[in-house]
Image 1 (spheres, rainbow, N blue to C red):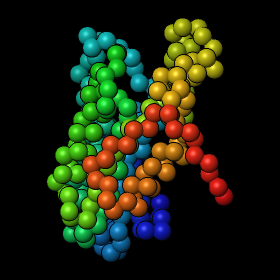
Image 2: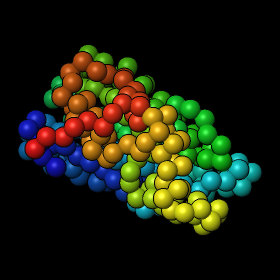
Image 3: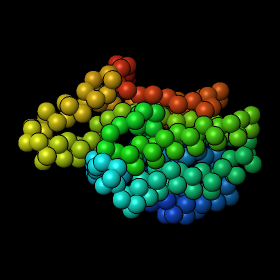
Image 4: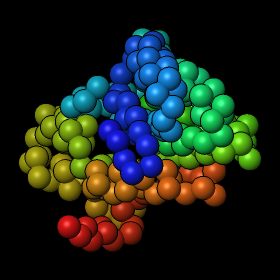
Length: 219
């Protein structure tokens, strides 16, 4: 995606090693072209359309644990590791990680997901200190439940487990956000772009919990 300030790389949820290769290729091409670029991770932490499995820690096997860490922590590390040197060499860059409220608070039955999102927030804070004053900023956005396929899949899981209606399941998920509503994907995108345009913010963890009104969008 290209914006007024350069190139904006969006990496969807996926396994870490593949993202490393993709990021390295993108970074090499953009560096050769002499253009500015920045990288962000899309919200989530599971493949598109897949809900997070709710299980007690005793049933959280190593495969599940490693998968969440690979997607939510190792993936962002590999991508940033590949692209950061070029950003530092040019003296300009933006890294925006889309974490989660789960990266700030505890939640039952999703220990692997919560731990991996905490790791992403920690990576953001540590790297922000490392690059301070070098023209590169590293920030994170922590949304609650967002109106995306992952939330719809979670609602279907609730329906399957409880027999409640789909609409009631969605409403229940929305009410789990402190603001009582789902976050719109456009709100997350706007927050990312705000960080891209902000030269001062670095190490900021921006909470999106639905308590703010949905911004009006103008054509």
